[in-house]
Length: 137
Image (tube, rainbow, N blue to C red; front, side, top):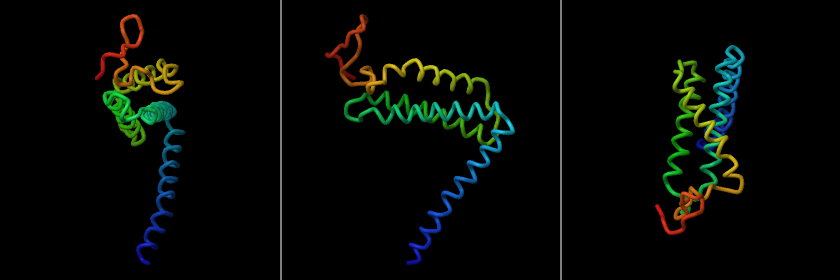
């Protein structure tokens, strides 16, 4: 019975801690709008990566694409945490996040109906843009 009480206390404390963290982030964002914008961009990149990873199918998609989007997400999370903790962010971290965001925006039309065929095993594109069914990774 004590274990259930402890789990109940934890279940109540976790949302409270999350709300406190959110309140701190909002207060910090209001104090520094540039940092708030950076945090928003990092959150958008992180969410876009998670959505694309969710669309990939483990048995059908190439593992390299899982790694690409996972590394993008880890990078965005790292910069987001640096911004949230008010640590210094170098110009190349901002450029990297900008590059990932630009890539996500430019390739979003390819993902409208599901994962891009380029991510699927055995469906590489030829130089003329047609799908090459014979090669597989």
